[in-house]
Amino acid sequence: MRLRAFQGLLHQPRRLSPRHCEAPGCSQATREGKAYCSDHVEMHPYVQDLIARLEQRESEDDRVNRRGPRAVNLQGITTQEILQHLAFHGPRTEERLCRELNLEVKTLQGYVQALRRKKLVTLGHTKRGSTVVKLAKGLVRAAEPIKAEELDTEAEAV
Ligand SMILES: [Zn+2]
Image (cartoon, rainbow, N blue to C red; front, top):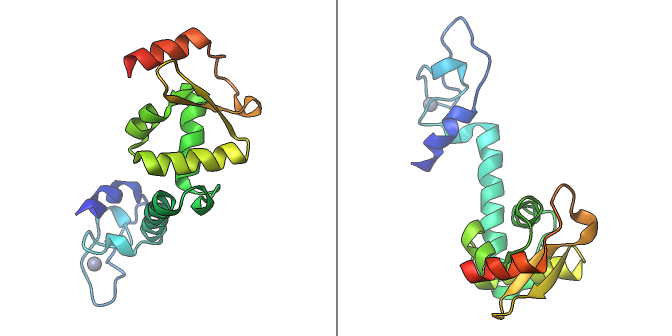
């Protein structure tokens, strides 16, 4: 069960007396002063919040895949992830973004179009016809300016 992976994140101050699970009807002692035992870790508010965000993201990606740019939430996790990825790594072809962010082409293109309309990214093309996504000038901070030759090199590597 993938929720077990979240358990390590739920640190709380240690208590002297053993703590018991707060799930109704469950009286298992919990580890390290956590509020819930491993069977009920998903009841923790932090995990609830995380699950809700992941579900929101999944359904948003799905809507963008079916309906395109107008389904994009610019505050959503995927949008933020694309912008952060570009800020950190520099311009990327759409194909490469799909691989690195694990998104389907149609989904990624929906996000990219929405970001372009808001002038958060600009688009270019490689000689091989791939679309290159680049963070808009105002958004580029620490990243070095990328030269055209580097884009061509990247396209060769694809
Ligand atoms: Zn429990």
